[in-house]
Length: 114
Image (tube, rainbow, N blue to C red; front, side):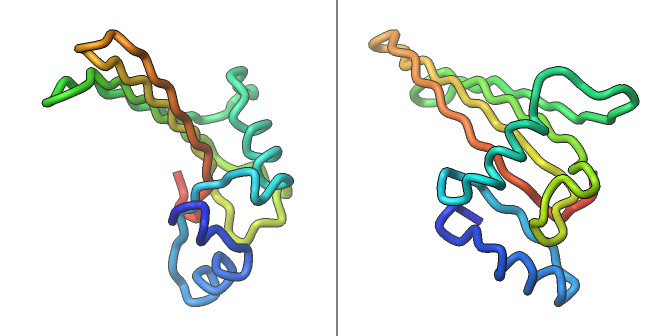
C-alpha cells in the first residue's frame, strides 16, 4: 500500500483476517518511521539476518539503480500490528540526455516473514 493507506487499523484488520500487509511509511506516522529508520541502520546486530537485492536497468530513458534491503522487525520494537519485517528501498536515476542524477528512497513494513 502507498503511504495514504498506511493505517494501524487497516493493518490490524488484515492481520486479524489472516492476511498480510505491506505498507510504505512516511512522516504521517513519525513514531513508526523513526522505529523503522533505526532498525534500517547500516550496522547489523550480531546474528541478524538481512536480505538485500539490487538491480540496474537502462530502458528507454534513465539509467536506474535500485537497492532493497530487508531485515526482521525486532520483537517489541513496534506496536504496529503484525510487523514482521522492515524494508528500505533506494533508487538512483541518471537522466542520460542531461546527466542529471535523481535520488529517492522509501521505508516500509510488512507482516510477511523474511
